[in-house]
Image 1: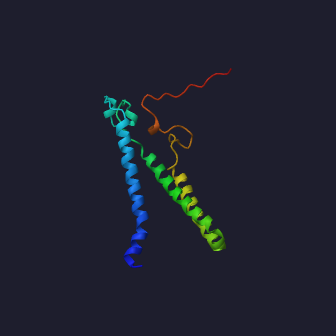
Image 2 (image 1 turned 45 degrees about the horizontal axis):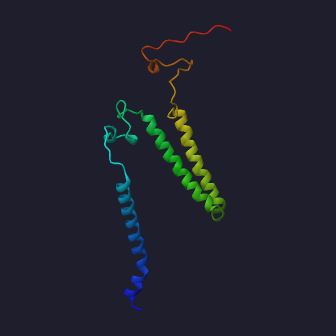
Image 3 (image 1 turned 180 degrees about the vertical axis):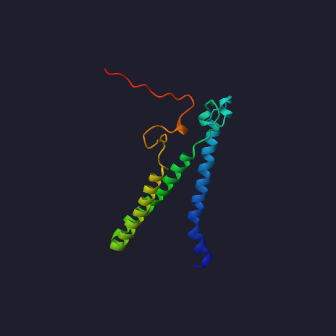
Length: 151
């Protein structure tokens, strides 16, 4: 058998798969167009979830703490990926691999402890050492609660 015939027999499953996928995509889109509803309403043109009419502005300012939580999630998610790979190869790595994993977890634990001590994970109102709310965290209309009496 010559080389071009061998290549043609090796590539035909890929071509058949590609044709099948394109046919399926075009078929689903055509079926959606044929049996789909054709009505337009005010809510349909809104750039929001499921055509529901929006209330208020969609452009909210979010605190930077939300982004910090996202970064923390990514960091610890990547840690989990590394540890899953390590767990699969645990027998081949032996004690040196175990010690490296412990060092890796210790470094991330130290970073988490540092962030916790720094206050990056604290979302509550800021408190003085005496336990009272800081002036910055109070609203202008803030009133101290009155102590309630006995039963």
